[in-house]
Image (cartoon, rainbow, N blue to C red; front, side, top):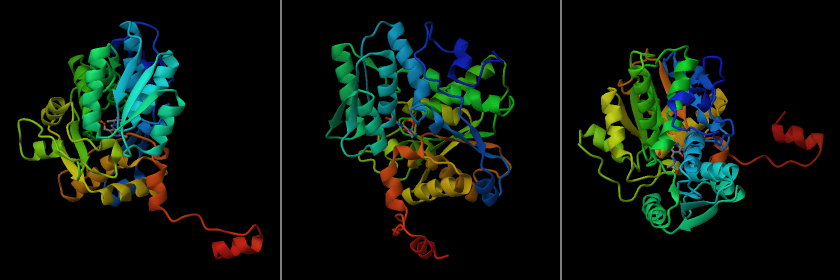
Length: 358
Ligand code: F0G
């Protein structure tokens, strides 16, 4: 298997799919060394795993290639999910590839434009719910139960099996070494739990001998997991009205609450929140200092590292891998609001020089 290319299916023996997978070449995403941002923080080994480089532009594709393959393996004929956007885009893509009907439920007015565009274009039936993500998830669970539709939210364990390959790839890309810490944005808390489970499996198989400190970052307006960790609670108490510019992680009642507490506590990790301003400022730094375009939720992981380094929680000598989860183009509206508009110019060289002040 060492000769197989880096991808989700490189690790197929550790995945549950026994049939030809529904695949569009997911995984195999780049691990970038954040030289400039790292230097500014006094860190030599700060990396970003760019999951925005997957087929639909987010890490969800790792879960969906496995989840939709399992739907077919189990003889299911239609699939559904609730989503803050990326899950719906990915399910629409993989439902199209599998040739099965797809239903997605979205919180009205709270999904980034690129994600809605993807769900619509790939042929999902898109339902906009007058309520938040947490309510949409309750509704789709009832729908799937009553109509025998296959549910592909991160409650579905097979989806998380696909997502655990993020951890496998990072270790392969670091030549077999486990990083000291992995930092992920947390919404429904599926991804951080999946990565933890995957590396735990590698350890049980004797491939690695330590766990990375799993570190979860949430937005200040939507941080039930951070509160549970910081206050040492036995369970996560939901946020009734989550709010953040990072709409992907605008989730008050994470369904993988129990798993994320195990992942963070079991690995000696931590959790922290970042403000919308810190998120947007890091999105801009990643774009301009590193050439890496990500959506706001993804920038939360790196913004979290900055905060935790500055407050002394993360040691500057640690090798840290941030997972940046979705592509910049997912949410063009937030970008346009942040940046100055293009400079208007007549179609002459003179006007161009004037516009450029050259
Ligand atoms: N980053 C992005 C870009 C996401 O879309 C999500 C989740 C997360 C991080 C958090 O991952 O839920 O596993 O903790 N998006 C889901 C969706 C909820 O519907 O697209 P998580």
